[in-house]
Length: 284
Image (cartoon, rainbow, N blue to C red):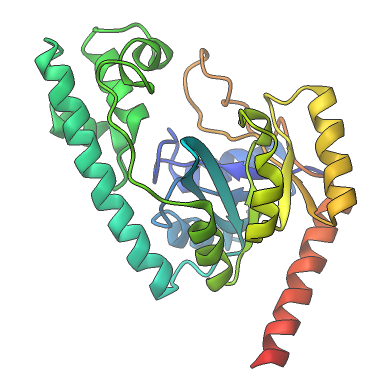
């Protein structure tokens, strides 16, 4: 029984709605999924309502993936079991959403100056939800025929160092970790194998990371072994997920349930969460 703890929906840059993702997971027989959209909780209310239907056996965990930066490197922090109605979290996410819109407009302007005729409204339609990211700009470029794939759009135009790239807003891991914990969640380092500098591990642990996403589609067996050992030595939670987006086949993150944790590993996560809840009651 697999729990896929890293799943995206159309509330951020996934293709499928929260309901469609849950239906797919349920049909596949997944024991549970964590919906972890980028910098937004907009899909969680509808997801949890749908998950409450009698025919849905897949357990749905409310989560988030926060895009942060440390020493010029992008670091993603996952949050599990968050209170998606927490005012502090919601207010900060509103600021991030505004920054994302401004960044998208600047990137589109750069592309327009290069002769690539896409509009902000077209990108908004690609987004479906309320959050705009670079994948939506890439999809608009594909639709207009300027590139053949999202990957080509990134590699030629909108990745760091490319002509239409605009630096993202400054949002640091320690703030994301704090927001997740403030909203009752568990803070997890996402896909550590994508980090350029493994030395950042100690810094992130000191900031309060509670677990590591060891099982991930792009991790090698050797990397997975290293992360399992790290979690054991540092007393961190071991997690995993597919990073499902439901995109076209040139993307690596389109196989729901291909990575995750088993029932025993998930039990440890539940036990850790329950312990945190009890401690918070005692502190109150």
